[in-house]
Image (cartoon, rainbow, N blue to C red; front, side, top):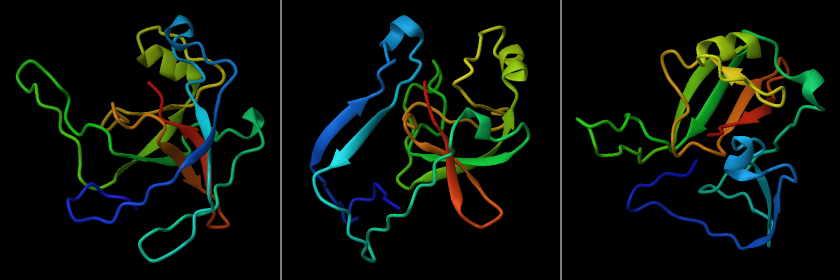
Amino acid sequence: MHNRLPNSRNHYFDVKRILVHHKYRGQSNGFLYDIALLTLGTSVRRRPSLKAGIIRLPAGPANDPPPHTAVRGIGWGLTKNITKNNPESDTPLLLMGADFRVLTNRDCTRRALGSPIAASQICIDSSNRAMCSGDSGGPLFRQLPSGQYELVGLASY
């Protein structure tokens, strides 16, 4: 996994194509569908300093993880809230991760003080930890009984 340590080996890849979701409209629709797929200009070769894996995607919303399913999110987002007393952002040098449970969209709407959750969204219980600013686009995944990992969502707004 990548880190932000000063002496780490970085790998750079040219992007050949960017495909933004056709329903993305920015703030005008509440940042729904804020996702893009990048096609790299060259294949990613596996080597000791660079590991790439296969991403298994669910077949559609009917295969969304049921409520209470254990999922994990990873990213380089803030580890402390920015407040008046703590104005400095705190981003990690190493990739961070946290475990969550899937909530029903109804429970999530109730916890979000009535803000509706779209059917296209998956909501996680973030009572103790949360995906945060800087984690956007990062994966939310679950481990299947086969041992494979399945991408079930992406951190968004």
